[in-house]
Amino acid sequence: MTTSDRKIEHLLLCVEKDVEAHRSYTGLRASGFDDLDLVHNCLPEINKKALDLETEFLGKKLRAPFLIASMTGGHPDTKAVNAALAGAAEELGIGIGVGSQRAAIEDPGMEDSFRIVRDKAPNAFIYGNVGAAQLTEFGIEGLERAVEMIGADAMAIHLNFLQEAIQPEGNVDATGCLAAIKKLCTELSVPVIVKETGAGISHSQALAICEAGAAAIDVGGLGGTSWAGVETYRAQKRGDLLSEHLGKQFWNWGIPTAVSIVESAISVPVVATGGVRCGIDAAKAIALGASLCGVALPLVAPALKGQKDVADRLTLIIEELRAAIFLCGCRTIEELGNAPVVITGRTREFLEQRGFETSKFARKRYKI
Image (tube, rainbow, N blue to C red):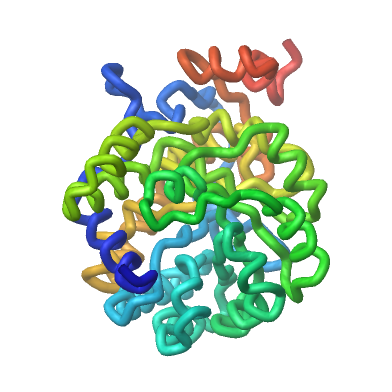
């Protein structure tokens, strides 16, 4: 199967099947957001209509702290989907990433499915996307082609070795990736974002990524789309019993998004992607230390219908965030980053066993 064929298969599976990670037997989401509570402010003393959701990310102003996270491209049938997503990003003044550009680097005939994003969003923050496993193969020249293809403001390098480990055609040679990222951060014409794709980033890897020169980290934590789950369905369709077994075993593998935000909040902006399903999730993520949030799976089905459906879904999420900010007594996204948040359950246990003091999050903004 070609890279292009995989792209459309992945997209359709995300619509047709349950591909989310799950926390077994508890009813709580794997992202960890259900273990977080923002502290209500009964006297906010502010006007909700005057709230400022604007934020700056890598030199570009966004009207709200959201990115439409990398999803698709690389197949003719994905062009309309990217057009709908990009149109909504332009309309709402938020950012957008494209899916892996590997297919278009390998086959220039696929470039239109990516170029449409800049065509439909001439003023938006747009970031490109290439896998870490392909950096040595494509080199700086290939990455600059990917930048030019969409007029990218930044380039994301995705780490998807969980998915690669399950795919029979996966690239499982992870040697030299950090050195390749460091070289890219030095030589590429735009800032580099390093992003996971559903298994999260731990503190030691976040440190290494920062030291390599990355301009931002997208945690891509456990709790959103499980690419092991997607590969499980692909394996079932082709009768691949080994890949199906591996997919099921590793469906819920990874570091929960809430944990990964704390682990990665070091010295560069953190994007919280992985199970952000509403504005309250986004508010919790920002209170934990994220600069902004990425949303993907909730937008796939709307994108198959058109721009209006995508914009309507995102508007709901943005308005939920606005209400949460107001009820925390905050005026800006920056103030929300200092709002107290109580961490309980498995997320608290995970963080404390990893050496993080969870009580300090509840004490923020107060002298206790």
